[in-house]
Amino acid sequence: MVHVKELGKSNIESAVDRDHVVVVGGGLAGLAAATALATQNIPTTLFESRPRLGGRAGSFLDTSRDEWIDHCQHVSLGCCTNLAWLMETVGLDNLFRRDTTLHFVAPPTPGPSPPEIHHLSTGPFPAPLHLLPALFGLKYLGRRHRRELRKGLVALARHRDRADDPPIGEWLARQGQSPMAVSGFWNVILVSALSESLDRISVSHARQVFVSGFLGHRRGWELLVPRVPLEEIYGRRLSEWLDRRGVTIRTGAGVARVEIRDDRPCGVRLKDDSFVAAERVVLAVPHHRVADLLPASLAASPSIARLSELETAPIAAVHAWFDRRFTELPHAVLVDRLGQWMFRREMSGEAGDYVQVVISAAGHLGGRDRSEVIEDVLAELCRIWPAASSAQVLQSRLVIEHRAVISPLPETDSLRPPQQSSLAGLQLAGDWTRTGWPGTMESAVRSGLLAVENLLAQQGIAEPLLQPDLPTGRLARWLLGL
Image 1 (tube, rainbow, N blue to C red):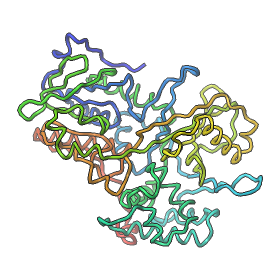
Image 2: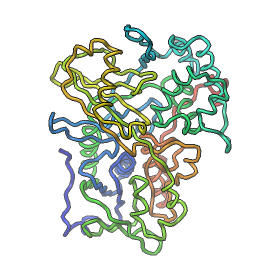
Image 3: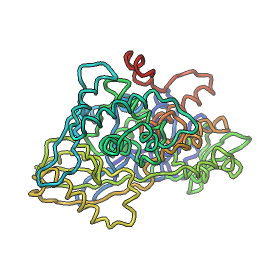
Image 4: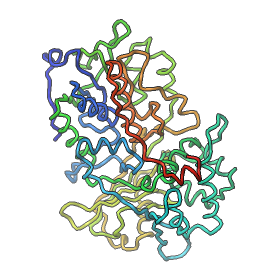
């Protein structure tokens, strides 16, 4: 059970004065902002309309199993320095495991034999050569295709954004990347990282993935995978940390609108019509809710009105519980299959396994029967690991997050507003704001920290909160111009 401070309607105004900051939204952006404010000893109240914190990085209670289930598997990378700061600040980094090898399952081939599994890990060389031996170990790609990958990675790293850049799929074709190289590598990495098809992903966002994650630093690509449900991390542990530092959290408390007076925020009006006075507000809600929470004149401003043009993409996850273990791998990258990743977590106190198979860019599932999708995913697991055929599926379900990510289209960044709104005391936060990153968990945390930096600067406090990126290796700078 999440511990929060409950405030009755009659005393909420007296509990929050104008020295407080109000954060609207309990997703990662709002939680990052509240954490940053707590480190500065600034009184803060956070409102979340849902009964639980975490937003899209949250869980739901499966009553049939009495177990918290994540909407979808959320993982971080070693290059996500601001998300790492959040976890370390709150003391939650021990709830993540670090996977230092990626396990690629070769594409399906005719015949009964299970596909080979290729292991990608860091070699002895400095970045950007540290993964070169492993890339050449992906034997399901022919020698010619692996040479194409090397040339394509170098070209992408050296590329400088242009207004007329095509989507990454077309760009790769211009670079001589064959269909096999695209389907066997580029598609696997980019679709899972950005949850869009290659004909829609911008070159700049694709470059961000490979430069930050694979080329600039030896550890930027390593996976950090939660060991426990996200509810334990963001719902309970982070909430308790904030509570101990005086942050008031109200879940199930929807904000109806931000009140503006004399071109400044003066507070928020809740849906129960109570009013909370605050001269500084961080609006950390999904982009499609922003305009509804602002006065009409502000909602009509170009930076807010154009938020309606941002497109989103869905992510789906098939959850399955087996009565026995069928693989020792903690995860697997599924090449050229319905799902892109399989993540395994041992079931507490039980002999079986719980796996999630993630289907990014899941718009193509629209209209399909859920049971058919589950059956197709389970059949793929059985073809990869024959031992899964003899295991009993205790339970399975398909979960779809319809607005999981902001689509990283070529025009997306021009639609993303900065955290500083046109009003000094009103900050915007969310992965949809301008952070220098695609719309990811890292982007959400960055936005919350940037919003608080702005509020501090307005008080004459120059306190850098945004964490530096991983340092780019000297050889990577020289060879690739990074």
